[in-house]
Length: 215
Image (tube, rainbow, N blue to C red; front, side, top):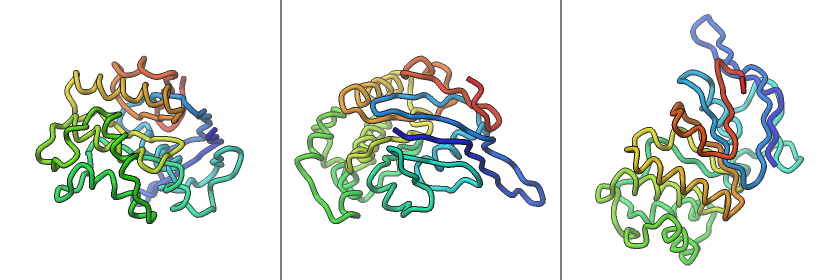
């Protein structure tokens, strides 16, 4: 269980102070697929960054399994609990698909080739392990990025506009894969998007507008 309470985040823009998040409350349970829906500037990325330990709020609390996350070792928190997926795939072009997925394990001094091969099978890329990013389609690169987000067994995956650069067919494939992940592996997924066609794909839709949850 991830619990967000009364999260406020402010940014300085010249002499102006902009409040990006205005008292956000949100609970995320294991195996839940939540679609965070809102227009550009609603605060979606800011909220994902705080839940993922990439940024700190000005006020509020963040707990995982009943324990406070803020003011702890955020690098350790991210490494042990969180997977990230972005609209840009951020694959290293000089590494094969397999090596891109392996990399997060190497950062923690680990290597589990059997599990990595299972992940490639899960995202239906068994025949692409040794291909380089330039040899993959956009959908294939995003599936490599999904495998990479799972390699360290996270409790939650945060996906920031992961289908923005994909065609409709590939978008639907990725969204269906997210639904399978939550159902079969009990991983929580929080997917931020402005695409209303995705809204009904999750277990729950949370609508964000001007830094507030409106539904």
